[in-house]
Length: 303
Image (tube, rainbow, N blue to C red; front, side, top):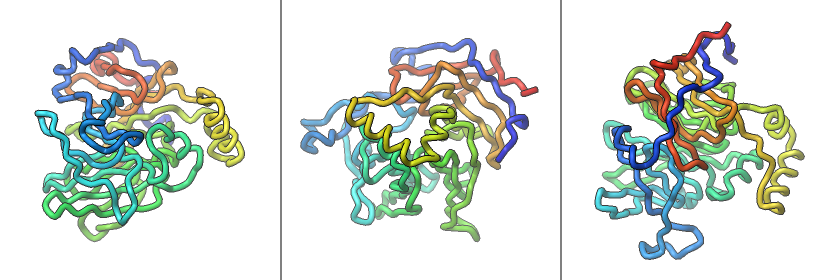
């Protein structure tokens, strides 16, 4: 476990700019509402529903890995692995050789029931790969606790993936003597990791959906509390709001923390990436993007 005093932290994000979809070009990325196949409807283009979950610079479908052309044409590349259908394909990254690496957060629960998977505390997640040449889908890592963000390392030697429930990021080796093995990249995170992005400048940015509140800590320790929360969610169409102090943690190529931006009023931040002088954050519940000038508001050393 790392000591919080060893990295820079800014516990209150100041100078946030809230930008709408009309300003997205400033991010130098194409972000659009994506047509996703609804699980409640027949899987046809005519019955596609608009997915309004912005999971930051990536196209994330509900039922599989989609290829979407600039003219809006949707092609389903894969929707299962080892005979098991994807329920919650979460994040994808592309290696320099064209291989696609993506996570299936849960093969049991869909997006609308993702909290049931987290509260259940069972390893339903998978890290998978898709070869666009052979069109083969392969499961690389089984039994992950809500497999989330994924990022190919700049040297292409490994893939970093976020395991939300376990509050850690793991490393899957793609080549070398450790090829096929898994080890921790960083663990005991100060919050629950969602997506991870590499900024091209030697740092990964890990979105933390919420800090580890005492309530969450108890819930993850005791299955009975999780069962009660699951019952409340199912019967009352909701659950107690337990998320707060979300933000983004920056780590170097060795997984060592370098900066932490968070705010007590933020919750369910899904992703973050630094582009130029700005840190951009997306959310799985809020229809906007957060922008912070990190030069104007740098993380401050802890005392």
